[in-house]
Image 1: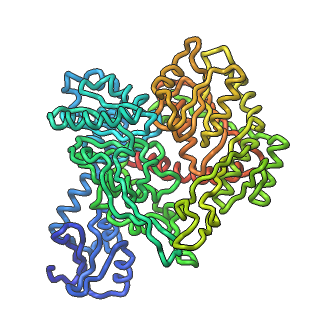
Image 2 (image 1 turned 30 degrees about the horizontal axis):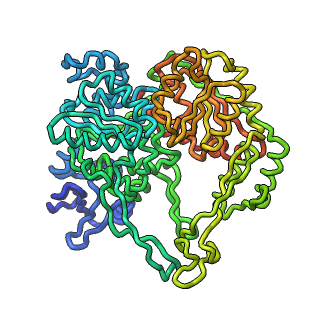
Image 3 (image 1 turned 45 degrees about the vertical axis):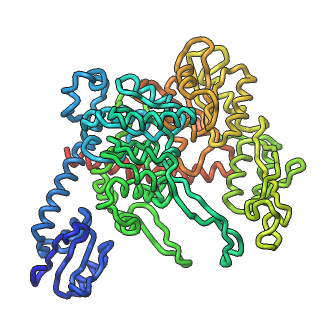
Length: 632
């Protein structure tokens, strides 16, 4: 490095580190040590910090005019800052002129169908891989289509990783309106396997196509063997090999790879088989789509950001230390909290070049906001006895079965069942996993099954003896959703498929026409959505679904009310389900009713989710609005 008596910063040859040469000063040394990722290179007597735009800004704040920047770092910094500023401008624009699509005579229908904000989204996504965090119902699906053509990648193959229930009901239905090349999109697994074979044939022939499959088809599979661990005193699974389940998918150069509802893929941990597989796909653009990208925790954003830009997001711990409150407790465990106080605005600036975020109420000012109502329910006498017995002792006897909780998580999970309805139990014997059904581990009696080789597996099933059902019936009647009429419709959701089945049976007995959406259900979701959206006689009045299967990527805006029978510890999941009805495609009032039993775990979950919901709003929406006003 050049000899210099002040503070001199220059980019190294790898362009991954910034080298800083400065005379010794206690204050300056403390400051450079506080920069995340800093290290001292004893041999060359310089400090080294990550070559990230945010780190460069931090150095300028620390040393001001005393910092002299070398020519390589100056050129790199100007290029990065300009790129970041331009992308941020487009990501926050209300509208932006299309550069390529306006010249395409083949797609006037698609170009004319775009809302103003979608034009800005298309230009932004065509220029960079990114997170599309627009709220549900703002047209993220069409954003992807427009971005492909705006980026002039329509001649290449496109890959969509979608929840199974949205493959045909959302993606196929949308693509078939505008796309003339082959669309390979089927809900059934056997048809999806055939689609992969056809995709490879088309790729070898040099023909463009769109392939829509479930995320589980693009993942690695691991082979394991059981080995005895002296440290743990039992057999453990050891990963011995990782192979591609559908290797041809990793040999195709994709124009775009889109991961729909990416918050459900588990990208927060990049060591998972699914995350490693997505990172191995060859592509020109990578899009992560979710209206609830944080999943209740800001730290969940790092995994997707790392996949989008591995150069600027190199270390998760360093990223967390820069932006999030971190502490080490008395046991040595590192805990990560929310955004550091005073850094909220800078945090969104940091995300803006990588993420577009829009609210329905911004892009559809005529759409009334959702109306919320907490319906506090009184449990039935038998339900109350069962709940209080389990809450007191973490165990309860139901007929001939003795049900207990082995840990706090199991206890809370079962309390959520009991807070919804009186439950019955079914049990069956399953082979013990610890001893593989033999009853022994290396010659010793298995402590799990006590040498029997089998363990009784108990499963809870809610009954119609439920304090929430009468309130649900009363609300449906109040909103005009009654048997025999087909104009007014409603959605009913639960996190448990057992609750969905119980409620569906009860409603059918009352004379309603009901459809259920569950993972693994045989009826095509596209048919259910199509019939529910119709007001003809004989069409479904109610859709009852789990949040996992019915809360992603589906348009069910014929419903005027949404009824949520329970909650998860992640507020994003019920919110996703609400937005199946509250969408820009239909301007109407949507009422959302949350059914909670008094003096139960329902109250605790509500309190926790209210706090998480505020954090989501504060980071994703409030600060973004402030930044947008500053730019204007």
